[in-house]
Figure (cartoon, rainbow, N blue to C red):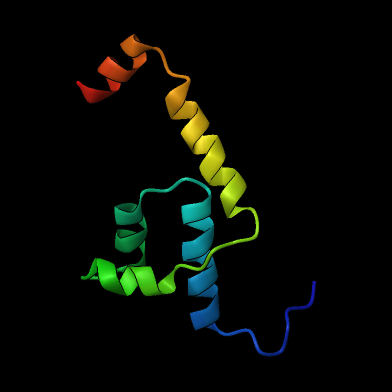
Length: 76
């Protein structure tokens, strides 16, 4: 597979951060993975992916469809 000629390590870091977030990774985990001291820096790395809205709705559905017991267990 050939990569585009304009690909850089910096662009790959941005893509990696965006893919982690889209996949459900916690923002603080992404921050730690990238080695950032500030969450503000990490936020600059994040770009919305085309399927991000679907992922957000799926995550919302998972939380809304939990039983009360599952919710209480995750808090404890």
